[in-house]
Image (cartoon, one colour):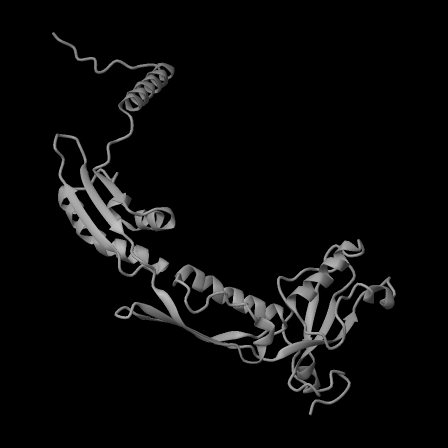
Length: 308
């Protein structure tokens, strides 16, 4: 009689050792094989620097080159899309007329990748031929704040940075409510030129007209020696930051809270507005800064006087 005893039981510690050994040999075998061969090899000539980097990042063929599920049919589909992807990748640099020659070669032997070749001439950058820059009352304070000018090559990255810098400069100059009412690029591909339109509404110029310390333990005339602004000065973000740094550097305050009070709103019985963030907790109470916007040069800045 034959008796079936079933599989032999392996002690747990021996089983663990066997699994670890198997994993070791599997890993070693994979290391000997090296990285998997990509399904498609992409070669791009004629581009360098940011143009090449952005083009490579935009190509679906490159993003999927190592996908083990990438089929021959999908490779050919992605190749057909590559020309459009390359054109779009060059547009942020003002290159709207690139010349492109491409070729797709199937594998010559088993296990070899497809080869996609792209020869790209990016062409000349499109030029800005018109700059419509309107800054309103802030124009004198913002001279040179928008670095693009007529005749410059169009670069969408620089255009975006220039808009941000213009707003930063306006708010730093005391135009705290400055905003862009129009920001647009108009491209004429037939004439191969562009018009840039930037219209800034600076809003009112805010001026420093008072300061109140809410704290205990220090004479007010001592603390006022740290104040960099004088009554009537434009209320800028830089001067506010300088005041904060001076008070913290004195060693008397670990953190300083500065709350802007809109005097015009206070005189009309309206809420003064919201504190500037991020909020910090002062060691001895907040420092309140009063500011107002000046509509006419003759307008009085004394908050005790009524607003006409």
